Image (cartoon, rainbow, N blue to C red; front, side, top):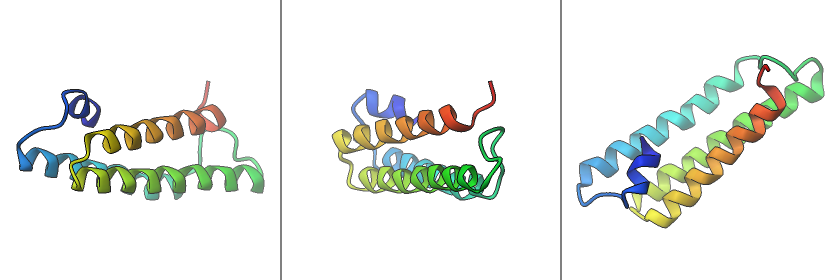
Length: 99
C-alpha cells in the first residue's frame, strides 16, 4: 500500500500521509516481533542467530526511517526508504527463507 501511495506521488490529503506513516510504524514493530522468532533456516548456530537478529534490527530501523520520511511528506525520501526496506527483506529472505 505504501508503494502504491509513493508511485502515485503521495497525496494532498494529510490524513492519507498519516495513515501511511502509521503503516510504516507497524512495519517497524514487525521487526521487533520477528526478532523474537526463529527463521525457517539459517539460524542453526550462534552466528546464524546473530545474522537473523541483525537483519530484523536493520528492517526495523529502515522502517523507522520510512516513517520519518512520511512524516515530512518527502516523496523521494519515502521512495528511497521503501527501496531500502525492500532490499533488506530480500537480503534476509536469501539467508533465512525456506525454499
